[in-house]
Image (cartoon, rainbow, N blue to C red; front, top):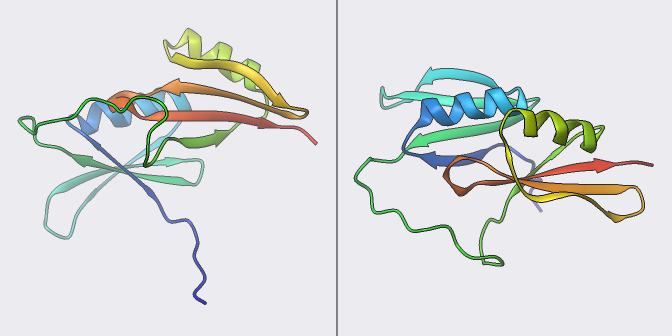
Amino acid sequence: MPTYSYDHIHLRTRDPRGTAEWYAKMFGAKVVESVQSDGQPRIDLDINGLTVFIAQVPRDADMAEAPADPHLGLDHFGLRVDDLDAAAAELKQRGVVFTTEPRTIRPGVKIAFVQCPDNVRVELLERRA
């Protein structure tokens, strides 16, 4: 059987620059600019080793609303933090909206969910031994 490993997440947005700047401000993402094989500019993110590609969606594209919870398909991606309470306090000062406040789901595991641009949800996760 082939070996599979993580490569990237791909987000779509009408505002790649604004989206990249949001992730840089909120999560310390490094913005990586390059040129695609078709000559078009491209903006990617490096969130401490997590590669996120950002693709432009035409301004006039018919966009469906975000699906109601729960729904089929990709639900969220997760970022691990050492201290969820400290991360939450810092993110709230930066204006991040929490859809689920930090809470313990089982001994040693705390989670929270934040709303990101274009209806992307990110889970923040703290694991303690």
